[in-house]
Length: 168
Image 1 (spheres, rainbow, N blue to C red):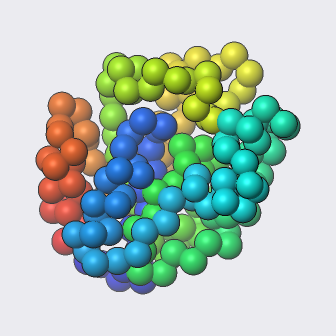
Image 2: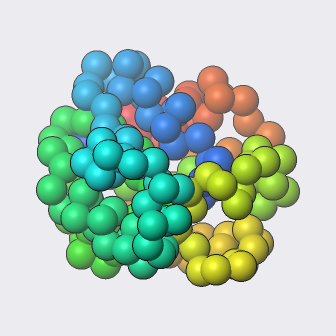
């Protein structure tokens, strides 16, 4: 694995498989694992959707940024929330200390995977569609990514192997 403190950060859309792949990657590499969405929920004592219901998407993004700036990511695989890419300072910290891997999943596949778009706790503008969110966020993911893994028509195992090949 390259330098950057042996840390790997997974970025991508909700439903891309960051949390699931992150656990498998951490196990394969013998490192720790952090899921920033879980860290937010533990810190706030609420689910992401409850945070959104009590305030708004900008508040969730602010909380997410605080977690991105404070979480110990050294020698870990980190699965970020889909909206992490909106935080310039959060992404700068991650990029400085880790290899950023964009899990690139086509919109059509995400539409199949995300059946609970309105209740999943996705930080988005009111009434923003998945397609609009996808177009907006993919530009950011590509901007920050050190490595892009094309997840189109790949099983989880194939995505894991693809990711490992590009990392090692």
